Image 1 (tube, helix red, strand yellow):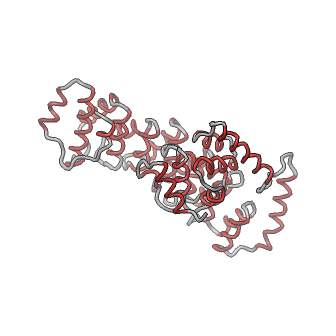
Image 2 (cartoon, rainbow, N blue to C red):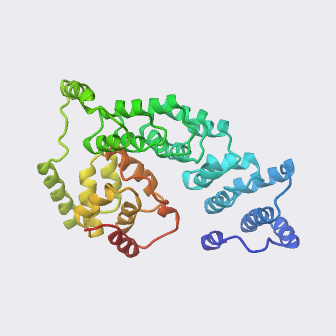
Length: 368
């Protein structure tokens, strides 16, 4: 069975029982995989009433464990919204590699809080981020995410408007935003943010977010001015001096480095990921502009946008795989005050896009 066949949509009608029986008698691995997806299609068309029998559940588990990666990926997509699927199988898929686990982590109604807490402990950071994004995430899981204090996961939770976040949980996120700048943007827009918490955040956010807070709440700027001055004094009294927001010398150095790499034929899409992981946002901007054939101003506009759509198209035009983009976006937000924002649908889930098409879509979204 080819990957193209696996990724095709379910058949309009389920397979006939004789066909499934023939596949069950065939020991070929390809036949086993077709049998697995055939039974899924049959159950989708005629959902079982109540729980599956233990025997059928064990058959699903056995076939799934023997299946190739691409088959497990399609299986996860097909079972993501199924309420009849064996819970044990959903839990196995939730702990699989992230591209397989993502659909069930995002949507499966069978994953309970205890299941999600287990994934938080046992799986990778990307799994944890996907849980933090899960619609209507339970309060126990949200509290566990806050307890762990991982910046990328906290940021994903702050963007999740439907999570069951208690007032105390929101207070703890606000406190974490002292050290995690990426939390500040989504928290200032969070529907449950109170005026008291907004005033607290006002002391350490930048000018743009202060304007957002003032537009939303009646903040007494005169009262908070002494606190802000004290915060600035405390920050500067340590051994580390703040890095200027706009450093022309550093910007020119990064531009020259990217130009040198480009002329030597060493500038690749992977360099974008490396730059962000080394926390060098300016280097990322120049590299993305060069790889995509864009201006630096266009890339900066995408980074400041309300939606991550334009940045996705820029990255896709530069050769970044769409499977890499969600994790890359999370790290960018950690370095960029929570931007780009979370408006709009995640376009990177719609399917593959060519670099040329991505470049056209990017230019249609930015002004420059």
